[in-house]
Image (cartoon, rainbow, N blue to C red; front, side):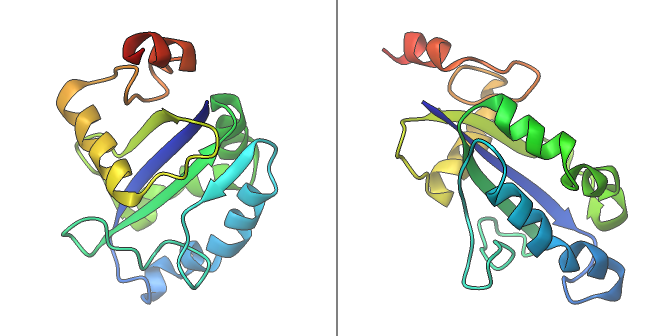
Length: 152
């Protein structure tokens, strides 16, 4: 099994605004780092090479990021041991706090590319049910074996 993730952020500014320019200007290099990281499988992107134009929620200020990784450790290594970490530390400059869960992890069969609808459903499931083997956060980090046992 591989690990899928969706995370969302609510931009404080239009993506063309000078206040968020540094974030936008670094999308390509950070995405390139993801794609060359050990354990990277796939990421959602539009014709511009990122996912900022993909509208998954009614609020147009919510942007999405979705990807698939070989393991939770591979995703964590990218998130916390690359240049990506510097942008995580500064997210409050560019994004509003979302009071509900803003990311979700779930297991997918090898070769499966999740749809944005599937990802939104997983986030809503997590918000409604808390961490379960079907949709979880790094706090619980359910293994693929637990997912299989729960769904087998």
